[in-house]
Every structure is written in structure tokens, then in C-alpha cells.
Length: 180
Image (cartoon, rainbow, N blue to C red; front, side, top):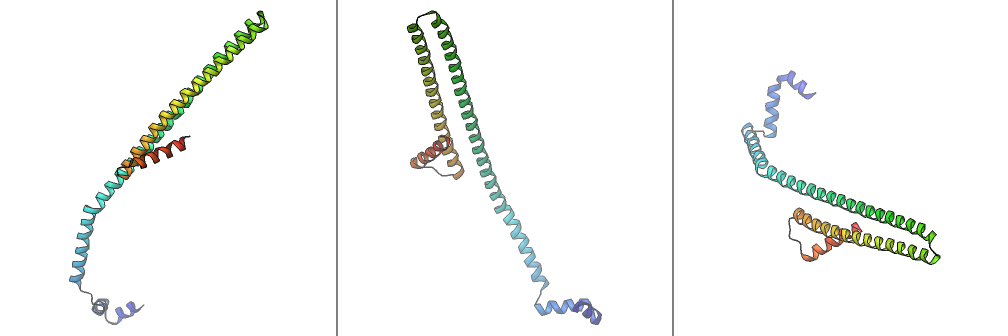
């Protein structure tokens, strides 16, 4: 409102000039400050902003790589579990087939022969399950070691520091506990 009144009284340019003088505004000083700001902004962009972005992109890539490795290990674990189930199913099928055969032949033999055949079939089942469990344990242990190694390696890459043997052991144990 005051600007409208001042413009009517003596012109807007005179009012602006008076206001600039009142606050001590110097156009040359203002121009030099704007120039300095532009130079500093360009230097920061060139020498600070771009390198920081490059470091952030590298870390993002390393984290993504670690996640891909974790997914790969999960897939391998799922495949090992699937093989375990297939082995167990095959062993059960074979054992069932042997039990059925034993029952058929036992009908023709005496009671004692029938008991021997069933016992042998059950023993085969137990051995097949035991062998399957041992194979599963070996596969799981191998995967746990590999996962632990990958976790230690990825952690070392992401944190960019050398891990002590105690740090490596702790990370491997944590990864093994999470898989168990």
C-alpha cells in the first residue's frame, strides 16, 4: 500500500533508490557476491557433489551385489532341500516296493520268513533315511560355510575394512544361526 502511495507521490524509482540507500545496498557489492556464490557453487558441484555421488553409487552397487548373492544362496538351499525330498521320496518308494514284495512272498512262506523280510525292508528304509539325512546335513553344512564366507566377503567389501578373524567367525555364526 505504501508503494502505491509513494509511486503516486514521486515515482517508484525514487522510492526504490531511497530504500536501497536506507538499507545500504550497493549494486557492485551485490554483483560481486552473486559472482562469488556462482563460482563456489560450480566448484562444489564439480569437486564435491560428483565424487560423493560416485561413492554412493558404488556402495549401492555393492549392496545390490550382496543381495543377489543372498538370493542365489537361498535358491541353492531350496534346490538342496528339493533334492533331499526327492531322495527321501525315492527311498520311501523303493522301501514300500520292497515291503510289498516281501509281503507277497511272505504269504507263501512261513511266519518266520515273513518276519525276516519285513525286518530287512525296514532296515533298508532306516539306512536310506540315514543316508538321506547325512547327505542333507553335508549339503546344509556346505551351504552354511559358503553363506558365511559370502557374508564375510560382502561385509568386508561394503564396510571397506579388513575383518579380524573374530569378526569373521561371529558373522559366519550369525549367518549359520539364521539358516538353521
